[in-house]
Image: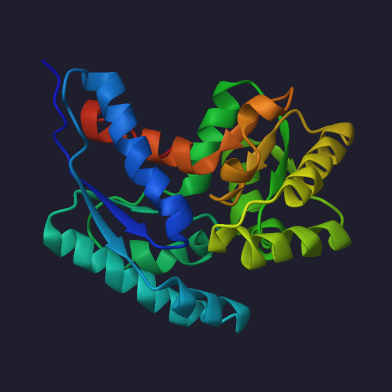
Length: 240
């Protein structure tokens, strides 16, 4: 009989609105694989998102790296066999985490790229914060490791989405008007040749669900969490 032999460490709180779904996702996937009354062996550390936001807008990536590296070390000391960072943007400083721990770290773009590749797509759109869309840590990772082209909205649209994320979504506010804006941005990317859309902010799938569009969407948080459980239960590889 299969069992979960590894404990998953989660760095959450960025924001807790989406981190709570990570806990659901890891347990959901564990039950899918093991059945019965199985739940996921996991440890959660929650950082103070207000501190992360302040450092983000100051573009103090070194400061953020220290915060999440410390959280990762706490998880390892507590018995985690691998670490997940429950957010997209802060993977910009994933090197700080990897250098601070001896257990495996699963990059969210690794899990997402693998799922896009599995579905046979070669060009996708990306929505997220301006930093996620504009910096190379996400789009470059997917292109380099999976040979998948990633396109993003125009500059004004990127700014609009950035404001929606920080002024609304991370605060638990999900409005019809913002949903309509996001749906239009997604449709625009499809019109430009994208075969699917990466929901590159873990709060976005709360705003726009997969059944509201007629093309593939990639819920990065769910994909990330499920990939971790697959490794913990079945010893699958974490990287290509």
